Image (cartoon, rainbow, N blue to C red):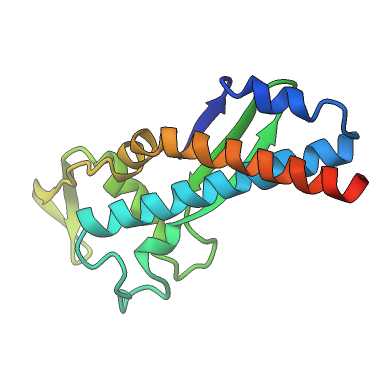
Length: 167
């Protein structure tokens, strides 16, 4: 599961560093997008903690905490737009429990058990369902304006830094 945030309304910042080399442009954009993504990840973790009990406590069944699932972002940019993909994903360890974070975001339908204790049941037994918490979607929607502000100030800061180095 990932979320994409596009920045189409900061053309002013993009136009200020068009005269830089490609490496400098890439450095400016990636640094600013990473800073913005870091804010979204922190906001998502905060929302997750507030909506789900025991999200930071380790489960003895697994080797990691549930909150560790919100941990990765990958910035990307094209001609005049920057994108950040923030991922909710589990680790690839066999004993990882972070895959459960996706179920808390979207919820599940009714789940039924057909076997219990290795024996087939005559009727399916209701095993429950998880209500969606929408912690990720809500935190991304709430932090869009702050994200854009962080990225634009970071672009300005990096542009000034490169200008000072060159001149």
